[in-house]
Length: 585
Image 1 (cartoon, one colour):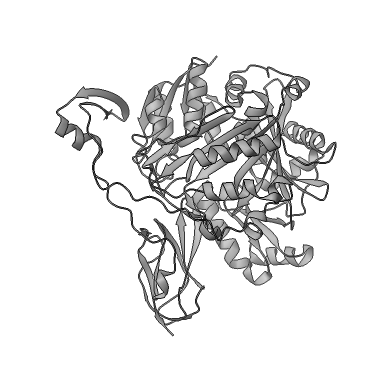
Image 2: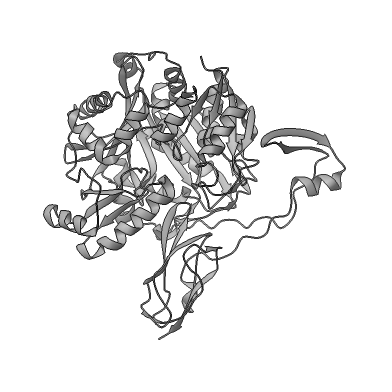
């Protein structure tokens, strides 16, 4: 068995791995950026090492810094979590070349299935039906236009090495291809480090159904459960459930068998997810995620299987502990997972809402679980994913699970940042969701969020109440140590809780119709779409803002002439900052 695992990640998934390892008697090592110096995963790990930097590229995607932490800590295994390096075959090879166990699939399988183009070929080899699309990277806009003209519009441009909706753009017509392709490539480069894209047919009203598989190094592969992940916004999941409801007899089993065949076609082992889209009784292979999924806990609650424990045991060379029949016999009831993100869903905008969490109080009760990487007083940074936590609920049947989830969401308290909770409740209470009549487009096209509001509470103006006994951290040669000390009360206040500045205002990009176009959140300008002297219409995009790895178009609030452009690509802005000034017509 492994003795010490380094988690090359942060936030909720790092905490999840630390807890699983601890239950198995395995020591853990955390790594952290400058912004995560006192994050929950750092506080929980047995050891922690500084990576330096603030952004993901400067820290969690800094290969040499992580390799140095592995060497310094003496870790004999690395768990990549999800995102960052989890689907990077070169990083996996670098780990294994050090003689360290990689808690993930073989690099060759990451190469083949991580590339969405070659994965389609592998799926075909395994007998899974695929959506019409290209089997090579798109070389330019003309190629995508030709595909759309042949197969019909809309089409979907997708990051070849991406997932989770990042670097994915739906294009309605030929004249929108060039901008959509450029945007998809920017997002893919920012989030995955590579900007290759491909194109496929875009189904009009599909459900997103996926299959959790786990394989061992002896060649055994089982499918653990299906999951429905159709409640999405911006092609990113909001609510997932297991098992996938409302499928005709035999479809779930056919999907499971197809997923196992696809995995075996590339010699896959460890945890992975095969994603399908389902419409009108047919399902098509979409892609394979060669890692643990964000939504893995909803499979765990209906099976009682700890998927992270299975990952660790498989990486140590152990065979799967159950056969396919034994896994199937463990599926009981229904599970729902709600991703609670730091976003304001008012009017369906889902605008990122970074900032300090002044209060985080999770619900409890029978069948209720909450996975998070934060506690009250921690901060959601613009530089990372905006997931506050995941609420996972089990019920004896789907109706019970839905009702229990709504109750838990109403009990949950999060302040300091806006969250998606009001939208989550609206989804769960809607008759379309109850009847399984929703699709991946339902949230954006059908769900009415016009009456939903989620205004973040103001950050506190005063310091927290002082305590006499204090715990602080020191860093020696890049290694983090926790130190407890007794200090005078006044010193304790200054050391433990420096006063935070108030958050900038600005709940939208309209600027109140004054011509002063402001941004609603912290972020980085990636594109300026207007110039001084240009005529613009109200609602026309003027800049593209990247926040929490998502691109947001900021629009003119009035029609008129651009008088001043205050930003350039690469500039960092804060919530409420003016980026463009327009002289009203």
